[in-house]
Amino acid sequence: MKTIGVFTKDFSLYYDLIKVLKKRKIPFVSLISLDNIPSGIGVILTSNIELHDVKLSKVIAADTYDTIDHAADLAIQMLVGKDLYSKVYIGIDPGEQPGIAVVGDDILLQKMNVSTPEKVVTMIKRVLREYPATETLIRIGHGSIITRNRIINSLISLGVPIEIVDETKTTPAQQIKRLEKDGEAAAAIALLRGGKVQRRLPLEPTKGDIRNIQERSRKLTNGKFSISEKTALRVLKGELSLKEAIDFEKK
Image 1 (cartoon, rainbow, N blue to C red):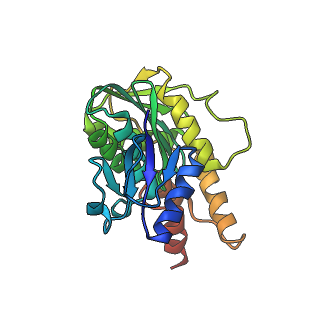
Image 2: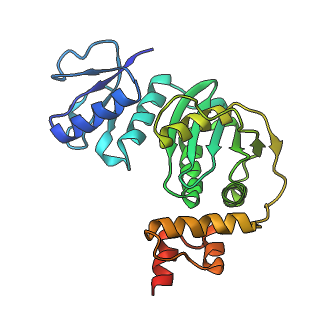
């Protein structure tokens, strides 16, 4: 497979690009100029200002996307060279900052995290646009039940089949950052078969769930106070973030 080329005179963008590519262990070549581009370069990452200077047909203006990771994902997709995948599996590791992974025709195309469960649906919509497939399936881990059900209920309207899978053995054992673990777990979840979701799922927090949210609010306020059960329930249902709940009760 061909390689990604990086060309930009914007030092800040260049630094951000190589930082992401190295972190994700994506092979790339830094280009000093656009004269005599090596035949092994399949796509070039550059800036929007320099976009029209690149004569290669496959070129991405990295600074026009929401994140550098997003631009890198599109570059990988261009290298793969697929307009339509046979099967795309989307794995979701539920939690406070859910991990999401995309596997297309047995190739790991993307790993990411979103900041809240409510942002999962926006990211999945983007994935569906960018990775069209004959068959698409969403698979989500069985843990974090309330959060999991909130995510599932937000995805049902997309009309994509959803499965709940046993995520017991999907968490990486090695010592890596939590967000990276969530991404790795999501990639494993994408490849596991599970039970199909037939309808919207109930949001029925237990007393333990509520106490857990109250304890977290106490830690965030350095032990000064914890939010009420009623407000904790709103957090569990996704109506408020924990920070918003604390600010709400402070007022």
